[in-house]
Length: 185
Length: 185
Image 1: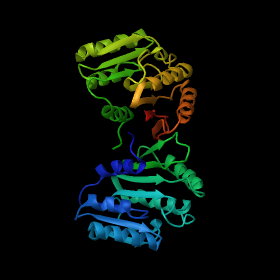
Image 2: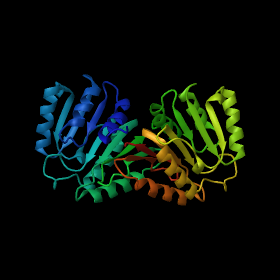
Image 3: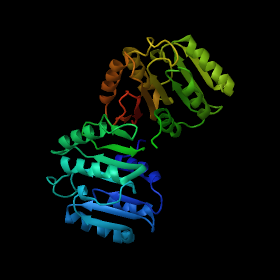
Image 4: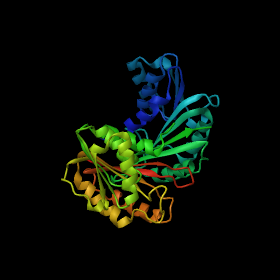
């Protein structure tokens, strides 16, 4: 069976991360990916996770404490277009575009900050590194963001970057799909 | 690094085939996929390979003899919309849409026979089975076939079928992409 989209994202990410690596969860949400990343980087690695909602920080913190992974993660209550890290230092940056599951659906990621964050993420990842974006576009503001982000990644210069689109195209309910940007030079 | 499209196809196919299985190469071409399939099915398995060009049969036969895999494969000089096998008996059907590499580029797969063959393939594969289509659309007639095939797979009923599109979207030279149809019911 084809993997669920969330599983596929994990399959893409896992082989790109070594113990001790620096990785970023650009959209913390409820912390599922933050925990996944924290497990892989090991005790010598570091995860930075960003979100603009206090609720996301609290949910993620709780999850990390439960898993005993809190010491590997720095949680930041700020927008992902304010990420500050050294260039070419990060293995993987993960984005989930949409709203915080179980929360206010009118508060979503927005095209201009998302594109700003992608510009940043491109500089931060090292050669061989990956930006993985899961696009949830079933909600009201989702269509515009989907179009903007697709347009952005399609024009990324090849072969400096290679962009993969992975999508299940016959379900009618606008299921999420994956865009993955690999830095090659 | 992301895999080349031909490697990705092999990654999709491999876990779907057990020794002893019946599989089909619907577009034999120069026999690369035929050989790949013959290796996986083992001595108790069977590969049927189709092509309308005598040159394809000869190239593939030679390759199979070199590899000592000839006894596992039946080569048929006929169109893939004439495939005859039992329904729900086949694990994997492979298509490469375009022209025979190194041969006459005006002789290509054509939309109406391709769609007929896909209709057939859907009946032949068993539940859990896979149809994998690599769409080469850089040539003159390729655009129309691409559109027709995309339209066809997008309307396949879900959840009876799940259709994956895997594409590298930023290179400008119209690189091949993959459509994969999984039968779920």
